[in-house]
Structures are given as structure tokens and as C-alpha cells.
Length: 231
Image (tube, rainbow, N blue to C red; front, side):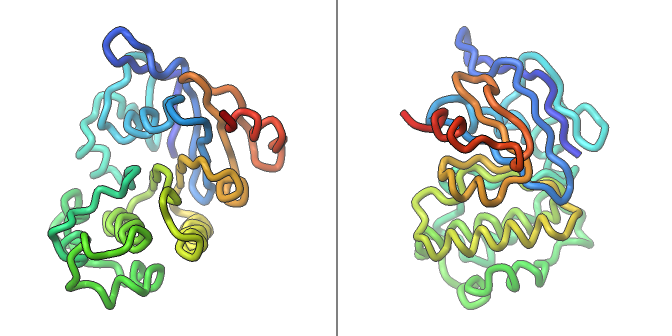
């Protein structure tokens, strides 16, 4: 579904991404790993259209989407769960979920029952303000908001950051469930190695804006990956 081909990205005169390539296929979880500051978030923002690449191509379902705006990519089925969650703290949980309607045609603007099966706690909190939720509950809300869009590509930026272990397990279960459906590609940036290792079907490791290791998880040499993640 997703093919990133040798993309570069510049912040002014500074080059943040160098010839980065990856792919993400339906029913598979692709994990991007690396130390802080190596370009992981920049890569995701380029894929979802929040930043425009300076070279290379991003293909989605066979079409070049490199020049499309973020809202146009969202309308094509690409959903983004950003680092830090970025929910609306003064809106209720229900209203936060409704913001996922923005990319949908009016006849399909309903809350999928599936999100309450995946995140049962949200059903009981629909009237609560997003800012009153715990960090873990806000992360669940951010993922649920993305799922309201009925995505075919789900992009998640460090979903375990600052989250208690019990909710990390819940998020891992949800990602496994979504991948097992076989109709969604999942692209995940993660620094928590065990979480990424246990979920990944495919992986890439970045350093200084470049891909330095990549492959299928079965071929991963754990020692090599860990060495690239330690400061």
C-alpha cells in the first residue's frame, strides 16, 4: 500500500532525511526505530503530508501523493496519531472523536462500534473533557479518533511514550487486532525496543536521517538493533 522511495527532507540548509525508503503493507506492522533526533518523526510527518519532501516519492495505493496536502492524504485513508497525542483538552471525548469526521463524506460520519470494543473505557467517558483523562486514556482516545476515519494506513508516533504498563499492553493488543484484520497497514515509530520487537513484521532503524538497518523481524539481529538505539 505505502511505498516511500528515497526521500530527502530539508529544514532550510539542514538535511533531516537522506534517501529514506520503506514500505508498509496491509496486515503487517512496520516499525521505525532509532535514537532521539534521527528523523523518525520528520519521516512520519512527511508521509502524512504535514511536511513536503525535497526529493524522492511517496506512493500510496500506486499513486504518487508527494505533492498532496495532509487533508487530501487523510481523505485517501491515511490516519496519523502524533507524538504527544494532541487531543483537544477542552472538548469532550465524544467531540474529540467527532473531529475524525473531517475527512469523511457526510453519509459515513458515524462512530464505529469497533472503537468501543477496542477501547471499552471510552464508552463510559464520552461526556468527560479530554484534558481530564489520564495520559494513557488520552492515548487511547487519540488512536480511537484516528480509527473514526476508517483508515487503510494507520501511522503512530511513539504510542507508548509516558504511558503506564497496563495501557501499553492494551495498545499492543489493539495494534495486533487491527493488523490481524488484514485490511490495514500499520506504520509505527517506537523507542521502547521490546514493544517494537514483539509487534513488528518489518523494521527499519534510522541514524542521522538515514536508514542503517532494515528487514523482516525474523531476520532482526537484536544486538545490532539495540546498539543503534543506545546513546
